[in-house]
Figure 1: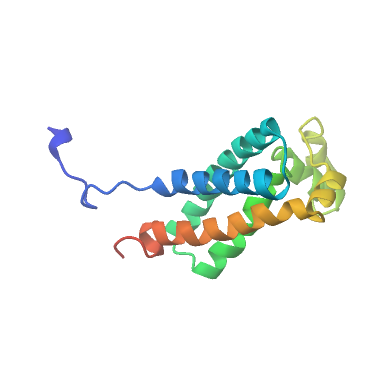
Figure 2: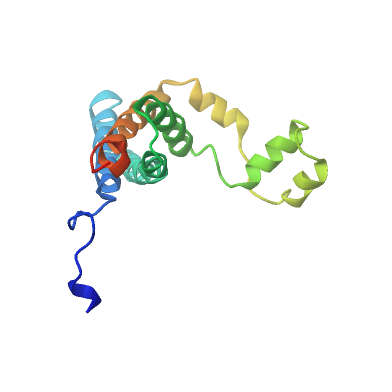
Length: 161
């Protein structure tokens, strides 16, 4: 039967880095909220919940780049950029990208009109987040996630090449 066949990689599952990254983000965010900023309990729990999903999503996206063979520097830079973008809530939909491109005159206005009802980016809020100290934890977690995923992906150094 098909169930008695062993996988080619010796039974090793891939994707465990998502759980690890999510837990690193949640634990790190707990430490920042509880010990550094001394937030209240519910604010800390909420931030940890958000950080868990940010870590999961960041590692899932970075995992694809790791499987493509991206080196450590690329993974660190992508980890910071993707981690901060996801954690800050900068992107509320793909419509925001086309809206921004049409606002800058890079694509025809008709393309921007197609997505006029789509969610967009609150640029003032994004700027406020990026210029505050709250960007430091996701940037550090993103950097660590990039290195962690690089080590755990098959082409990244954690598995067979």
